[in-house]
Picture 1 (spheres, rainbow, N blue to C red):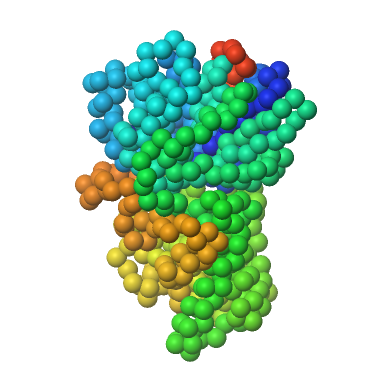
Picture 2 (cartoon, rainbow, N blue to C red; picture 1 turned 30 degrees about the vertical axis):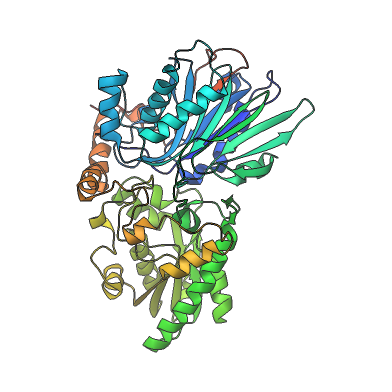
Length: 524
């Protein structure tokens, strides 16, 4: 079986000046996407200096189903037919049939359990069908169109063709984000592809434009070509990008993440007020669970005319617990990550605001911390509805049975996490909070809340197979193998990434493309 990597960040950069090096800006851009994955990020200056070339592709990775093997760090590369570097964010749901095709018909061997490598080889196979020694934009568009007819799932991709240019494309439903921007220089225009607009802002690019669903974009030093290469499908960007994953200073599909979270807070305030009144409970203070929920919590507090206090202080040198592999690691890191200020909790009825409640691990630990420092009552309000279903489009939701809301009503969820009361945002209110900023989007992927999958092709058999490769029981087994297979010297608390670069008109350069700190894990 082949399953994809998880939520990731992708980036492609082409500098008009072919003698300039793209690596430093790719490194900086990846650091701005590190919230999207920390399993393959980081790069050191010595390695950057070795990476010569005026265009390149980069990737930060969070692994979902499968393994955390650093061999799956992207970008991937094939040298046939033309020398292609490829990075991807998302998940395919028809991987088994595609693998069979690759083996029996295309005769291409897939070395890892990554959908990204599978997509790369599908793209290469479609290009090879042209039978041309030199290809043009029309050939590339035809190849991507063929890939989209073969694949089902969510994918935002960037690629680089040696000596040609950079490419981006997005699945027909536009589930995962990717956009482009440009920057004027003395010699011409530089171009950027990235998962989020914040990369363009920070690197001095402007005219941000989202790649449309089913669209492919090719950029060379001669210009930009765009083409719709897939048949019309329902545009359904993933609403969880706005709830949690994207940076608040990003704009995705014309929607400000920050403004959408403000609106979530306003809508949640109405629901909280209704439930509190119904239960006869009063609240003394609103406290956000940092960092994602801050924007919503502040708006909620203002709307309810309640004091807002940032009383959970975060250690910024500990990563996001949601994207940490393994339940035990997440549980241990909650208290390492947060400290509750007793002065703001003691003797008070506290309303904690969080972006969502997934496994319940973080919520349970924080609620206990609040009670340990003297909180009388702890109510928790979630900006998202209860999550009861698997995500199959590239977000590392655990198996359904590991979701705290699975098979439980609101009262049972509160009991499971130790809260006096839990209040969830309603799904219509969540959708309205996001959609109001771009009414042209009529549908969002809300499958983790509804169990309805916009691409089709997701049945109970598929979900069981997915869950057999997902979840902490699988990842813990991998972690045990890693610990048993590595020496003391290999235990480096660092990251691994690949940045592939190419100079204009030439082949991939001979510099080492594996850079940064990484564990030399040995998985048998």
